[in-house]
Image (cartoon, rainbow, N blue to C red; front, side, top):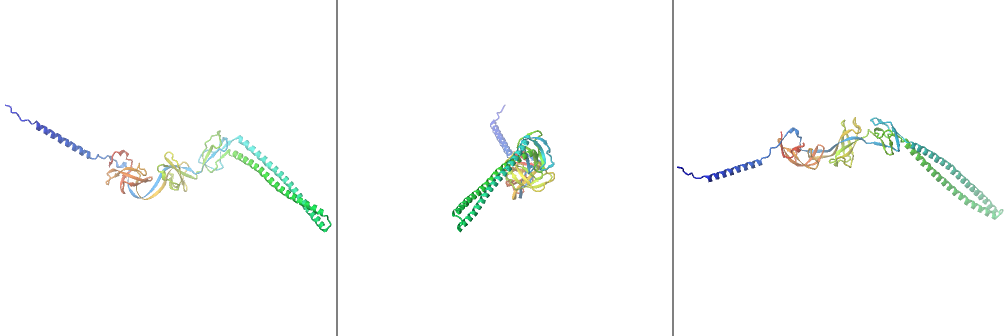
Length: 418
């Protein structure tokens, strides 16, 4: 006989609910625990990174740039007149040339004719001056002779009047004779004065006429000298002692006045033109000390000029070199230049990071005490130099930071060093 068993469906349902609840709680706990775990730090080979320790003390601020040696005295020789290049006697080389060395020769038949015309005009003007000189001297002599004759008549008349007046006082001579001689003396005195003034006027006139003609002579002489110098300039000379660098014309080429025919430089006086990044050139001023590395030696100098414009992201700085240059120094030689900006006495500084710019805030990896890991910290930078940068905030003396390019780890805040 079958016996009916009591129903346990409700108990099974309760157990099932309990099991599900426990499972949910366990899964939630595991998930929460896993979420609170820090992700594993990526490993970085210690030999591939460059680190430095933060220090306190003096920091020399410098900027560095590449450049070239250029002559301080460069002379372009322009054509003074139109012409045709007939010969090139000297070609560019390192061989020194003298100031009177003829580099090339030009030809200009019209200029040769102008020189002859100017010479003839000068001779005509000089002949006219000599002719005028004789003429005015003759006229002046005639006037002086006339003045002398009137003065002689005056003297004779005065002597005669003295005699007539004496005779009249003694009762021998007539009174009218004395009066007539007196009138004659007065007339001749007036004439003598007029003739003297006329002589002075004639003298001044002669000087003025001669000066005017001399001015014409000088004008023709200046024109002749100008034409002669232009003709002489067809023999193009160096002008200074140095080396010939460029001759930008060819034989047979027609040139116009002002066209550059050659460039001569003095290789003994060189300066350095250094290209400084525009972000670093704001503190460069004339008078600062500089060191030029010519690869064959170091030379000292001073900043003489800072270009006010920016070209291709750089500013050109001229450095005047003190003392003799090392062997092998020549124009267009590539050099390195380092300019000393200032010497900071007591600052916190570290080696300059790869992407560290002045007056900026960047993130760096700071090494832990055992150098096994590095964590990211924000660092405020101040003034910078070629290899160092000032620390304003974020680091202390003795902290070690990684200065290498860590851009591939921008998504993590911690790395392990192995």
